[in-house]
Image 1 (tube, helix red, strand yellow):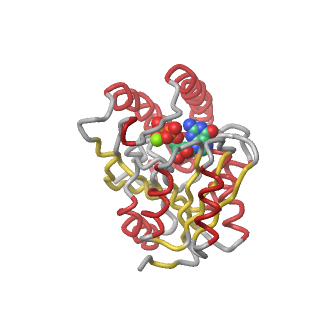
Image 2 (cartoon, protein in one colour; image 1 turned 120 degrees about the vertical axis):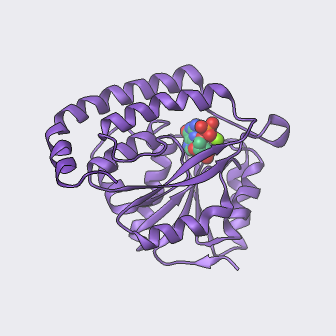
Image 3 (cartoon, rainbow, N blue to C red; image 1 turned 30 degrees about the vertical axis):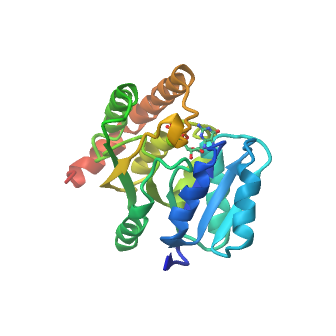
Length: 255
Ligand SMILES: Nc1nc2c(ncn2[C@@H]2O[C@H](COP(=O)(O)OP(=O)(O)O)[C@@H](O)[C@H]2O)c(=O)[nH]1
Ligand SMILES: [Mg+2]
């Protein structure tokens, strides 16, 4: 039986993930109620398939955005509706089968025990993970840690996380960025700045081959350019907040 919650929901942004999404959503539903999927202008037919699934399952809700706006925009649409429905925390996970649905209950329990914190997945890679992606994230992680004065971000990019909804929605509404692939790292850095503590938990990540139905919309040049511009922007924010961050660090040393 999936655990039911009136405070914590699973939120799955989804853009042209292919048929893997159906197993991903089933795996999440087996562990949690409710699960919401935000279909981000997908054109691969999965929107209709997910809506058909939701027609027979009151624990599943599918929100369809008419056109593709990016992962961050899809998450913002989801958390805005979730807050209106009274939810306080959202576990985000990818729709493409890369993230460990079996860890949903443990991540939710960690969040329930520490509701002011964000629970961040720390990726445990298998041998199949592309070296370019594994090493590339070290750059983003180095910047994110500097920008937060080492407040403890284990991984800046992994999208398997539990967010407190209120501070995330406030930060996103006050910022016109964070709508695309820049969402995950910018969210952790800005939440740290807002005083939301990161708690890291190991979580395996799978890289599926094309034969297994693996799909990625990560484009090396486009998305690394977006990440570089994002860290340049965050670095300016970091310099402006340096007195605040140092003051906080002096009052409460990082554990
Ligand atoms: N790349 C991308 N992902 C989106 C978008 N909207 C929602 N998503 C979802 O965000 C997650 C991460 O995207 P993915 O292409 O798998 O990136 P990767 O896992 O880093 O290779 C998936 O669940 C996507 O379905 C979008 O416009 N672009
Ligand atoms: Mg993926």
